Length: 431
Image 1 (tube, one colour):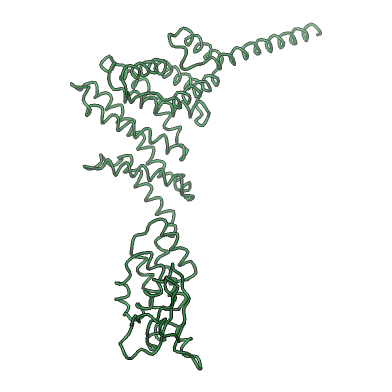
Image 2: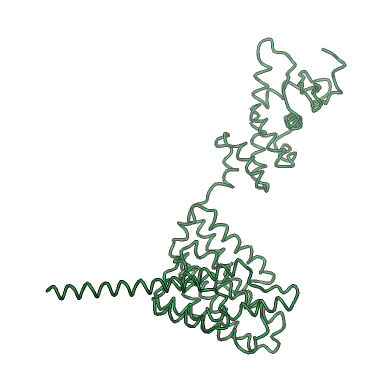
């Protein structure tokens, strides 16, 4: 043995009583020697026991390690000398505990394995760390159950209870949010959306009658709150104040959020029905003279929510009777036609005016309206086209595509009618 290659030993036990040498290759690639005790090694590790209790066994054990797990090897050797309660206290990070755990499994150190599992079960993880933990414990069997209990899927009843609680908080069903509760409410809304988008079991939860009843109750409450806040808004002495608009904008934001989650629960029809019911009253209040040059944020948000409704009805994801579709369109089309140029004008007058109908929103609304118009009975379409061509604003929404289709269908219908009459007449003569 080349004594010059031996670094200053890192003594793990009492000096003078060590009888075993563990050789590790350190980060620089040189061997490093750790003087140890066979009694400790054989008691704490089945691997070392097997190595040391063989006939003619050497007191030198060489361990291959890489630059990535060298420190974990050193940590493991030191932990072999500690009682269980001190092993747990010596673990100081998820990364270190995982590294030691993997080696403890290889060297069959049951006590250290148990301490690493106990540590990992008790401390918080990051997403990346959770993936590494799963890889490390996937083959450990029952000993890993405490860790797995943190990440295993919960049963449907528990999922339902959590979802209902989150929905109630997100929709303020049980009352207004406590002080500083707006951030918590926004967080609850984000988590409800996340659960609806990511959880494979949630469709079973959202089909539950109790869950759907809770959501419908919340929707009804928010719609009523919106109407009430809008009505009380006109009673404010100072409509230009920020606080005057704040409550009503909260309600509208909640309604916009509901437009994101209800389609995932097959409940968008409930939203459309509620919106259609309150639309006339809402527009009557918004178009009050007191709000002529105020509340542009409110008016823009109102258009955004309405766009969701028009999209749902226009493209057939929500099926309504023709009279309801006609009423919905005739209620909102004049307002959309009116508000778009006003918002454009304000944007041209004021640099940085934030309340505009961006191009995507405009195209979405126009496409939904065209589709909705084409789904109506021909006579109702004729009324809408006549009104559209008489209006000052015919550029938006542009119904020319729908008008062309209507003209073609009208001629086709007349041709079919005449052909049908001719067939009836010829049949009568032949008799």
